[in-house]
Amino acid sequence: YGYAQQARYTDLVGRATDAIQRVADERGLTLDELADRTVPTLGLDERGGKVLDFGPRQFQIRLTPELAPLLTDGQGALLKTLPKPNRQDDATLAKEAAADWKDFKKQLQTVASAQVVRLEHAMCQQRRWSVAEFERFFVQHPLLRGLVQRLVWAVFGADGALHTTLRVAEELEPVALDERVLDLHALPADHRIGLPHPLELPPALRQ
Image 1 (cartoon, one colour):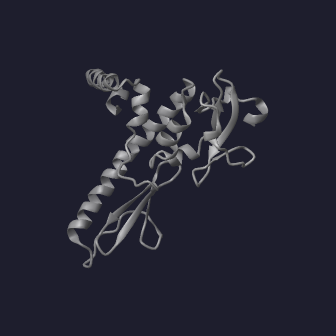
Image 2 (spheres, rainbow, N blue to C red):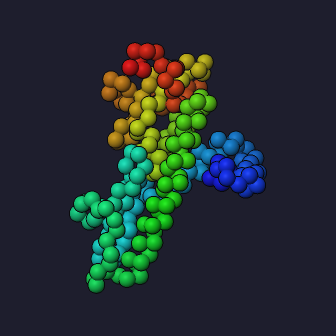
Image 3 (cartoon, rainbow, N blue to C red):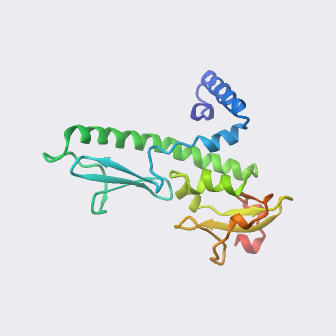
């Protein structure tokens, strides 16, 4: 999917696009629906973290809402970089952890920028998701959840009318503008969740 989005090598773009189109067709999905289902987690656990194991010492990776990596030690202190192993560390584990950290940062940079662009396109194209899809592919996704929490979402009726806006709080609960927790599962089955374009918002609400 990443190859299909870049414009440097025309032949590679064409072959990558053909390949993902075949995969989508085999599963009865559009390319956008396939993209929803193939966002990598980069090894992050369900809470959005990842452990780098040195044996006696462990270091924790988490993401900022801007999808930048944060590295902390066992006491939670923020680190600028992964420390070099000492004599007490397991040399093999430390070497693997260092390689993992380097690869993680490289992949994250590519994935994060692609997801920001993808969601911007979704807003402009007025894509909508069911509540189950919204929760599965966005709120509960270990890599995307931070980005999801930075955005304004909205509930749209079957006629496309905007019913209410919401944000995703720290505990991953949908919250209205007045801080009420919303029960999205109580919505009518034909209602959908999407990213409202500013032009879709009444002036007072946009403000």
